[in-house]
Structures are given as C-alpha cells and as structure tokens.
Image (cartoon, rainbow, N blue to C red; front, side):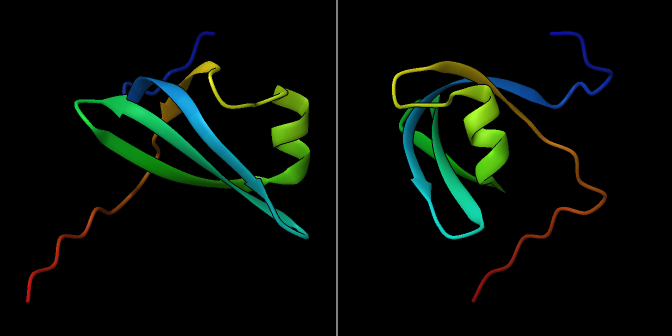
Length: 69
C-alpha cells in the first residue's frame, strides 16, 4: 500500500459492526488503545475486514480538537 499521507498507524481489527448504511470498525493500535472508525458497509465488504486482521488506520483531518471540562 502506497499513500502520500504520513498519518497511518498499523493496527489490528478487533470489531466490525455493520449497520443499515454505515459500519463501525474498532482497531487496536497498541498499548491498550482502541480507535473507532466509521466506514461504509461496501468498503468493509471490499476490504473483507474481520476481527484479527492486520490493517492500517489512515488519518486525514484538517482539524483536531481537544476538550476538557
């Protein structure tokens, strides 16, 4: 896989929950951190994502916000 983005993290898929139109994919990025990604059901099917698969979290964002109460 060749991508121009530098924001990619190797991960392990831990959960795939498909809904009517969208899917949520849980990925373990190490040190006890699990990240949740939203995708389409079609993309999950095309990638054949399932728990235990090694993959990459690819992050593209123009803003990152941090909040605290």
